[in-house]
Structures are given as C-alpha cells and as structure tokens.
Length: 462
Ligand code: BES
Ligand code: MN
Ligand code: MN
Image (cartoon, rainbow, N blue to C red):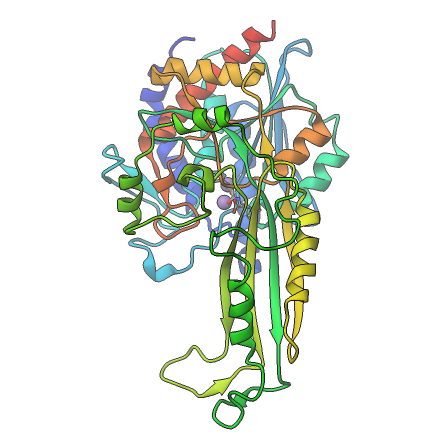
C-alpha cells in the first residue's frame, strides 16, 4: 500500500468540500416535501461515483426513491466487495435546538474533535460515512492500487425502512453477487479505541391508537365517569415493563439468545466508563433491565421504548378537556433469533388484550427487520481487523451495537454473503439528534483505512 497518506493529504480540502456540498441537500426521505432534494442527491452520488472511477453507473428506479449503482470489475477471478450506504437522512427536527442550520454545514472544534467536526444532518449518518467509500475508491483508482472488483449500492430509503431496496436485492442476485458486503453506517468506541461492529439489533415499530368517547368532552362534566384515552394509554404503556424493567408481553423473551458467562465476560473487557457516560448525558443514574450492565442493555438485550406520544390539548395555557383519542409510536429493539414479525404479532395481541372496557385499541405495524451477528473468524472480519491495526496502530475490539440496519439480514439471506460493519462515527456524534456531526479526523481515517481492507481482503482470498 503506497501513497495513501500522501494522496489524502493532497486532497483532503477537496474531500471535505465535496462532502459539504452533498450535506447541503436536504435528502429527508420521511417527508415528501423534500422529494426533489432526495432525487437530486441520488444524481450527485451518481456523478461522484463516475468521477471516482466506477463504471456502469446508473440510477435504478424503484417504487420509492432510486438506488444508485456503480461498479468496477477488473478481473472476474478476483473477489468482489459490495459497498452499501444510504444517501437519505432523518428529519432535522426540532430545528430550534440546532446551533447552526442543519443543511448549512459548518466545521467547528469540539472537545472530542479538536481537529474539527462537520455539523450537519447526515454528516455521520450516513452521507459522511458513505462518502468515505467513494473517496477511498477515487484514491485506489488514482493511485493504481484497486486490488479487486467493487460494486456500489447506495439507497435513499434506509431511514424509512428500505422497502424498495428489499425488492431490488431480491430481483438482482446476479448483478449484486459479491464475496463480502462492506458498510460504514455504525460507530466505534473511541478515536484511540477502534472497534468493529459485530452485531445489530432487529426492530419492530408500531403505532397505537386508543379511542374512547366519540368526541372531546368537558373534563368537569364527564371527567371520572368515562375512560380518558390518555389516562388509559399511559397506564397500558406503563404496564409493558415490570418492576425489574423486564418487558411483560407474553412470549417476548422466548427466542432471546442468552450469552454465556464467558461471552459476557469478554464483552465487559471493552473499555467503558459509567461516569463519563452519565456525564455526557447529564444524568445522575442509568436505568434499565435488572441483572444487566449498561453495555449489555443497549446491545444484547431486547427493549421497548415509546418514541412519541400525543393527544388532547398541548397548546398555550390550559384547556379542560378529555380527548376522544390518544396515540403513541413504540419501537422494540430485538436481538438475534427474535423474529420481528412474530414479535409484532405478540405485541398486537397483548396490547389489545390489556385494553379496559370503554375504549377501543388499534395497533398498526410500521416497519421492522431482523437482528444480525457476524462471526469474527471470517476472511472479511480478519481483513478489517488487519486494516484497523495498520491505520490505528491497535487491534480493533469486536462490539455488538444497539442500532439497527434491518436490510443487513436480508443481504445475507438473499446474497449469501457476510457483512462487515466498519463504522467510524462516535456515539457522541448525535446522529438523529440536533447538532449531528462527524469528526474531520474520523472522516479522513475512514478514507485511509478502507483501502487496507480491500488489500487484505484480496490477499486473504488468494
Ligand atoms: N446508521 C443507523 C443505524 C446505526 C447507527 C447502527 C449507529 C449502529 C450504530 C441507521 O441509519 C438507522 O438509523 N437505523 C434505524 C432503523 C431504520 C429502520 C430507521 C435505527 O436504528 O433506528
Ligand atoms: Mn444510517
Ligand atoms: Mn439513521
């Protein structure tokens, strides 16, 4: 591997500026008002892949937002890396909590990022991390050291469930055939503690609706005499956890894989400071399922959380009213072996069964997906581990993440290949939150590390 640092050094300002231009386009997949911007982003990705040296670059139309594909096949007998990423972003709300506008990227120094970090929606999730691969591709082609075949598949609906991508993958086995799938859409422990994500949680996302009387009522004239849908909904939600914070849905834990004492001891070796964790979030205590550590609670254990709850009067001042309806959005993070569709049915059945007389309950499933774990003895993992060891000077720690990329399990099922999750973000990068950012150092380190992965993956396959 030659000239990698030199090439990055010579081109880093342009690498940053190009990413900043991409971040200016509000590609919010959840909000149809931004349709033009999402489509424009796909066009930009297409031309960036062409400039990076990809061939057969195309915008593949779907029922939803397009998938950008491009490849470079140098020799059919060499291995093929399939890079996946997403160009859509989460909505930026609440806008007033941003220190600078979400689609006007700025570079600012922070305590963890003294070299500066790019502040913008999508900076880390996933435009910044996806773009590292485009720039690494450019680097490898420009310095004549692309060692194997590459395919890029960048989608625009990850943040809303990847529905079109699922169809695309099912219909394009041949086009997408590969030896390993490479994704940077997760994080690492710290800048001086590299880690490789070896697991993702599954997800079941539902919306619930509780309906009481046929109209909003005066809370004096009717209060106490009829079921108040908001009171009922909050009571029902509270009952979904017991006093040990175990989830009470019958059958919920049936297929949960329990880790062995050895596996848990291995996990506990990863550096972690509870004090720093609490300090960073400004909380005086952590909270969660009895019998498990913080790192276990947010990775190997399933959870249930209300993501939004509404109903009744929330405007200025006071209005005395019993609302006719109350609503909530609930997500369940799942672990390997829990089937998301089965869990969704268990939730529905249970939630309907605990509704008291006087209200009706409706449960509407949104999207979901299976969890994923990847072995650490595969060629892909070994290649990634060697790559980090070269560029960080330390062997990376395998770590299971609490987040979800539901499409990864479908990749394995349809394309029969393993996924390597080389994430370069930090938990403190505030993805999905106001002031999302991505360290300049992390961005450049990613671009530096990726070519080593290609190198070792090709070498180990010989
Ligand atoms: N990139 C994230 C997932 C992620 C982040 C995994 C950090 C591990 C570490 C992805 O874009 C995401 O936000 N996924 C959603 C699920 C999706 C179906 C909306 C999630 O995890 O909430
Ligand atoms: Mn993402
Ligand atoms: Mn995301």
